[in-house]
Image 1 (cartoon, protein in one colour):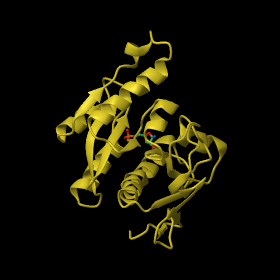
Image 2 (cartoon, helix red, strand yellow):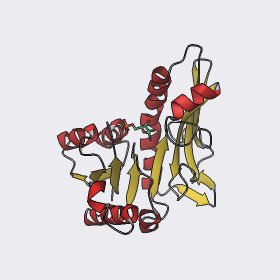
Image 3 (cartoon, protein in one colour):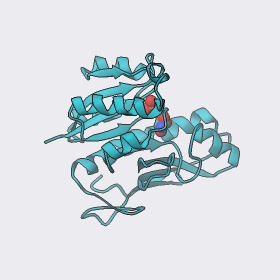
Length: 227
Ligand code: GRF
């Protein structure tokens, strides 16, 4: 059975498209059951519908009267995901902090992609943070979602070098290209049940490799399992 995915977005949805492309190409044994957005105008909603994927916009404003608005919102998200038979949740540019309500409903089944080498530069504007810090290397990280923002156990990472005259735009574009490779691969390992986690440590079952890539002097050393 393909992995039943729910994807949560807030914006343009390029990672969502990469996931759908990987499914169409037979590289990811999954099916996107529903895309949920907290933003009505998220371009990813339109793009998902064009690909025949069901979408739901859940307006955070409808929950502000509740005693615990954030938890109530997540409870509504859980209902939508449950109604669509979702077993694994991919956050893809989802600009909300998820609460324990969602995390407990899908224990170790929620993944996120972040545009830095965590634990460096968590939170917003990770690419800008890396540049302003003077980092020479940055990248992207796929990790499990836990209650701390961008703190969950790391599943896979790709490093890219930061060159002279790098801008937020050039670095973001460079990282995004790798995000589109890394996220579907991580999800495929989830689909195969090959991601083993012990506390913070994650390993890939029956592989000598880790899900990581390092770009070196223009060449890329690829350690993707089976990649
Ligand atoms: C990506 O850079 C992702 O790492 C971050 O938000 C951005 C989302 O882009 N979490 P997109 O909506 O998938 O195009």
